[in-house]
Image (cartoon, rainbow, N blue to C red; front, side, top):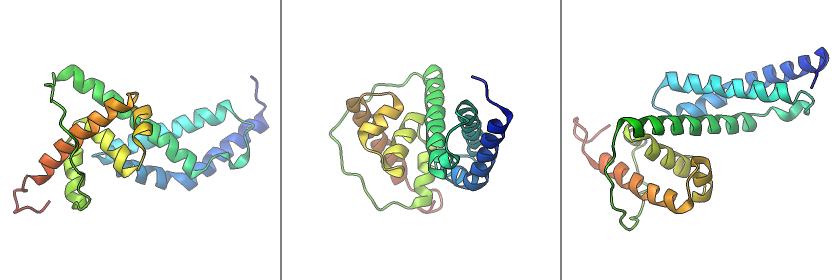
Length: 180
């Protein structure tokens, strides 16, 4: 498909406007969900590269088609892709023992945020991904399963293991008397 220069310029202008409006929101969304500033910056860049590719393939879309919500949606997909890559790498480097599934225990709502973020950052990638999508992004188990490419049953089992592992790490007193 051939695009004339006027249409290409309009698409570029829309992308630049979308960047100016959305870069801070995309970065903030990612930074709250990853352990390092460098990774958040890399995923933000990947998000805007994907947005640029989409805009260049669909130059005739409406001028308002680049929204912060659309960009955050792309960022969510880039984050899930990152977690999948990291999970594959972990599986190739580590042989994980099979942990028997136990009945689901209640999830405690009162957590110290800073400590919780530190504990979350230390969890294996799959556990971090499933907890973040389910509880930070407030997605239904069905949506989490679709994003992670798992069945609902497997996702529920993963949530049980991830919550158990999070709770065990969270309940260990910090070296400074229990404060994060």
